[in-house]
Length: 393
Image (tube, rainbow, N blue to C red):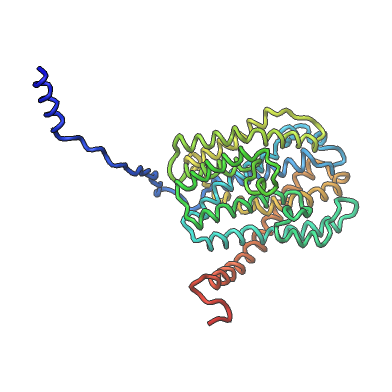
């Protein structure tokens, strides 16, 4: 019996051995891009831009403007409950920026992205600084004009890190946008892919959560823990648009919506100090959820039917409207509020601001952009390593 068992064991031992598989490298398949049926410009986003701008205008003119002969809540009792949440238009702007800036720099050379941002951002901004400074300085008894050295610093858009007062209060958002541009520019230099942007979203979420209570000024400048959630969600919405939605992207959006609540709650509490009537917090959740829902509908193509011809024109007006409306509008309200019925003044002021934005777009932005674009491109070509600079051989 023992001999038979030994023979059987020997037979098994001498049989073919199963090879241990070599360690395999895991490869992740990137999702397939949606290449058909995608327009170069999304008209629905232009409509959302206009909505965001009008929300901010309503907040400044109705909810917090103390330039009326009475406070805004008494002048517009039916509009005030809605205008009181108009500050959320800024969060909608950040969502749109996360989407649009990814679209703008995807597959483009870094130099082209840089040129497109400069000619888009600075011409209207420079004009707004000049116009606001002149109006505030020339209208007596109103806002305190900035000192000229502060005005000059504002032209760089770096007044916030240099601890210089903004010429207009709305300019604070521009530095947040500028930091996001720099982050996306760094990613574009490396090369934008689905996987890299997904990694950016996850790393940025972790950094924002861990750095939310950091006392480091530099760290907070880099990660923007109060507003990063909206840029990140905008990136995720763009990836949905380009590669189709999936549960991971939906999870990122949901995390951003939930994680943004502490900062949104702080902004709501701060807004109460600017208004003469207290408003509840719960509508903030509804308005913010509506902003996320509108972006989700845009990302999934559900708003592709919004292709009216006037939407691109409206979208082009939102940036100069945003830059011009606040301090100039407050001075106009203060001067005319005792002379003109308030509802007529409000309608006339918003109409005038839209007209002014249209004039800035046609007479300043477009001509100056056409003038700047080739010159900036020429300057960038001269610093490329393969090309000699001026005066070299």
